[in-house]
Length: 212
Image (cartoon, rainbow, N blue to C red; front, side, top):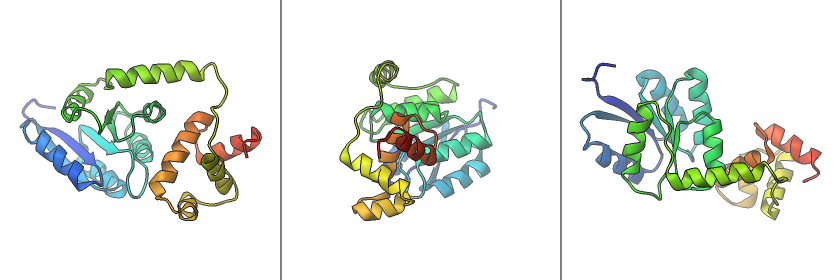
């Protein structure tokens, strides 16, 4: 890409305040052109039409999860440079993001300038993780290699049972009177801890291990 061309960055997030904050932060850098989308469907369409240099995806979108959108973009373009943006600092989610081929993970609870730094680093072909987050991820990886599946809460077991009975995540959310995002987060955590690639595989492995 010629040096005179701006770095095209697609931000996919359904929170107006977050988009406004990113807009204000990135507008100070004339070398960056920001594009916006507020859900997975529009985000995918924007990616296909704009072919941005870097994509920043909120892990919790209103229609599909940010991790699923990451998988879809990578399936279309294995060289896509994607950052996951989240309020959750749990290393389980960081590990899942990297498994989906994201190039980094940025916490919304951290330094606001981190997103700018992360975008530039990922655009340069590097992987970006805050040092504290990288340390947590290392501890998680080492501990998982030497232990059995972690203890599950009553809520997690009930989610698995509902899914095993053929319920969708939306139906489970309605039954528990919580948001779809809450159930999606629980399922993501369960899949990582069980070692499953899909929700169907997760339920099958849970049944095999007599968790439900």
